[in-house]
Length: 111
Image 1 (tube, rainbow, N blue to C red):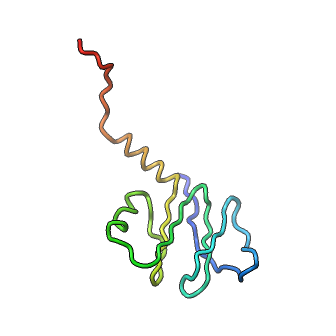
Image 2 (image 1 turned 180 degrees about the vertical axis):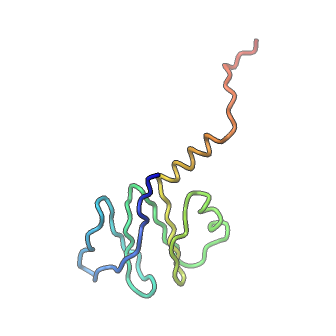
Image 3 (image 1 turned 30 degrees about the horizontal axis):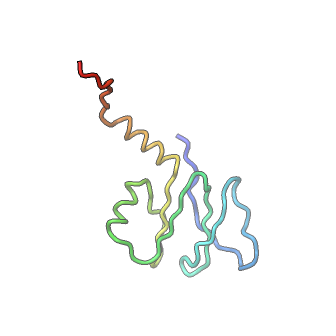
C-alpha cells in the first residue's frame, strides 16, 4: 500500500524570511508557538488535512474525530495536532461501502 510520509513540525523561520524548501508538492504553514518555539507544519495539501486545536475540546469532538479519519499525531501544553490522510479516508469509506449490506434493486413494479 502507498503510504505518504506524515506531516511534520519544524522550526519556523524568523519573521519576514521565507521558509526552508519543502518536498515537491508540499507546503509549510505557520502554527504559532509549539513547545515554546515558533513552528510551522509541513504537509502535502492534496493528500493531508491538518487540524491544530488549542484549548479544551469537548469529549464528543475528541470521540468523533477518529471516526472521521483523523489521527492525533502530536500534542503539547494546550494544543493538539490532528492529521487526516485523504487517500486513506477515501479507501476506508469505500471499504465500508463494500462490506455493508447489499441494497435490493427493484424496478418498482407491482405485478
